Image 1 (tube, chains in turn orange, purple, cyan, brown):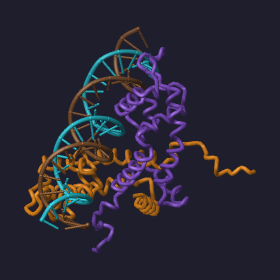
Image 2 (cartoon, chains in turn brown, cyan, orange, green):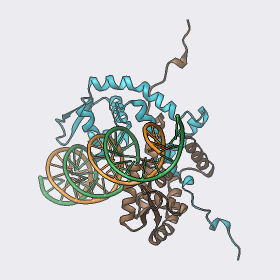
Image 3 (tube, rainbow over the protein chains, first blue to last red):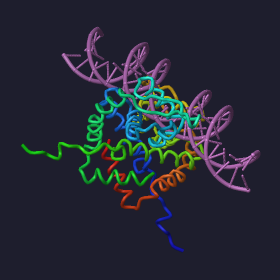
Image 4 (cartoon, chains in turn green, purple, yellow, blue):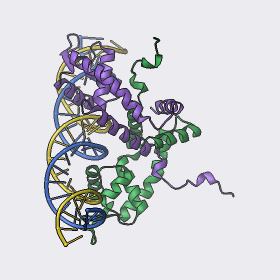
Length: 146
Length: 146
DNA sequence: TCAAATATATTTGCATACATACAAAACTTC
DNA sequence: GAAGTTTTGTATGTATGCAAATATATTTGA
């Protein structure tokens, strides 16, 4: 009877856990985002507005939420805040009475145009510790995880 | 006068942004964590309890929070929930009247012993799409980001 | 066609997470 | 040892994020 080293896991270090590291990296990014965006939009609000301006046909609330990776409850709150600032508008669908049809306002499109360059700088600042090859590698690996 | 291609940024795609990808990858991990942990502890509660059992000398609230990457306000809530379940205990420091000295209870240590194997499985499940080399690379790159 | 399954939206409750402001205690420095 | 700074803990408000329950409307399939 022999001992198999693979049966003996090493010590459990938080720093070796993907979840712990994802949380810390995300926190660092969020700090950079909040600071550089100067409180204009949160990261989720920005993503949502960018997506809506991309599809820019009218789209339902849930469908837009899915495109940004938010569940229905979260989506409702994010859109409520965007609408309160007149960056997004909502109309009842004629064909499907459950739906609201969402679209950007001119103010929403103007704000996106202004903030996209800032968002590029935020990405640059977050990735500053990595070279070009490492950046591509990281994005590729993250994309595999979901 | 010539045109420099580096002056013309390409289109802005959310999928190329590190922040968007970090958020999605983290979400996927959290879903796996919540499901496999069966509601015993949240990811942050687990990390906090593991850290506290590692240092296992008494430690102040803020100091523990910093070791897990939480701010003071978040730390307070997390510890309140762990204490309510008798996984952590708190005593007033004699030498520093501002401080609470935190330590794990026997129930806390027992729970950690039971859950560490589950946490290993959660990490494995989250990283399932990657081979060994990719996993090491991802952890290394994430560690550079904060 | 009508019942069952789906899709959409809302609401509530709980758990991070950060900004901000505050009070008390301890430390540093001159 | 007094003044200024730092640390610790608390409280509040805002913003995700998910689970679960509810209600309504649409689509599907037997």
